[in-house]
Image (cartoon, rainbow, N blue to C red; front, side, top):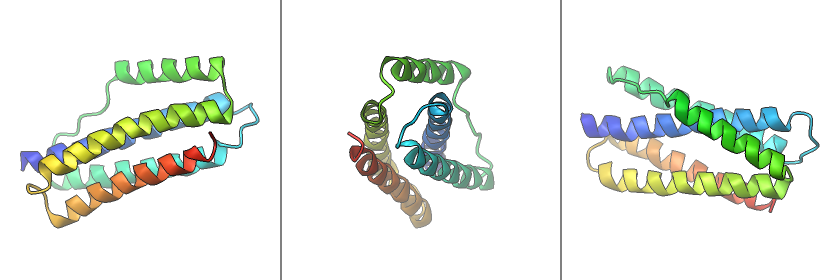
Length: 145
């Protein structure tokens, strides 16, 4: 039971943080003329969808849902602000996003391998679909480099 929750909690926290940082980036780019905004809006919707589904799985299992901490959100927000101030070009934003999502996909791959025998087929497919979303999103942002 615990292993299954570890995988789902990882997806929830990763998707929730992805939604948070994407919305902060969109906020920072609001008055700027970036072509990447539409892709960001699509990414935000997908992160929100994955966070919601993961939360439903966890609630169905009566699992403790740990939110991302205020400190990590504050640090992420500061990092985004710093990057946008330094260079808010689409290429720079895409580079930042690709690096962040790549780290997430590496962790997701490790979690899938670690817990694939402990979770249901449905949950494993959900985890794999989240990983595919991350990989697809990286490819989308490469077009902006």
